[in-house]
Image 1 (tube, helix red, strand yellow):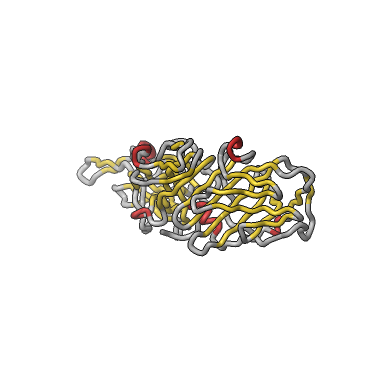
Image 2 (cartoon, rainbow, N blue to C red):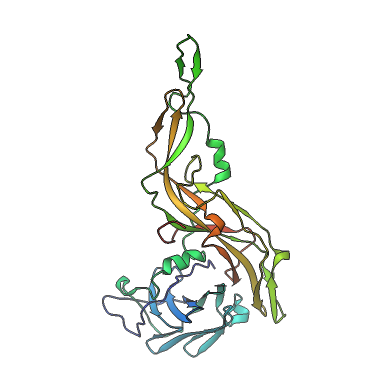
Length: 343
């Protein structure tokens, strides 16, 4: 199961939604919970497995869908139960242990995200809500999603270190030479340079990577993933095309090292892993060719986006995952759905 939560529950709609709706049967649904640990606020949302259709949502840990109640009862690590009507499941990645659902959780000291794929009770009709009924409980829900890797995976960028191969002193008129007054010549080969386009249209994006192997608790009441199971990774700058790196005036740097001295815990029969978020600023630049013999620069029209790690990883941190939210060591993704602005 791909673990991509829709964070931020929506205003409670009990039973029948207003406006045009579509009615359809579904063998299973996604039930997603978000909890702000600092305020103890919750949101819950029920969708189809593709997340294309929403059937219910609430700014609480309980949702009423007609005569059926959907309730999460979980601790700070996401361990606990999911109740669908009269059926209670254990939040777990193994359907054989959970009673028929497949779940994963992501958490840190301030937030918790839980998601389960669950069979929908037979005989109870699902009502698809119109798009107009999907306002979020949390103003910054897109940033919260992105900060935990719960958005679209965008891997259409190159690794910054590899781009250096493309930064060659070649361009329009690369071999031009200018006659010197004494009858000699001097080289006018251009060098590459970069400049910000306008203010750069900066946005906060996030690089996520799994630092640890998956630790399996099995019959132990509790287990953890820590230093022994983890690697440290160097996260470099990236771009959509070959271009010399510039900071653009933002508080960014060319690389950031994640470290691996962290620990995450889970309960009996669970698996747990350590993940890491490197906060990056995305900004738009153009590439140019600077001619030393004329002191002129010829700029290309193509806009290029650079992603650079924020200084001191401002906005980044490690976090924990359990169940189906754990994949494999070194698995990574880039999520672009953060807020506008610099670090």
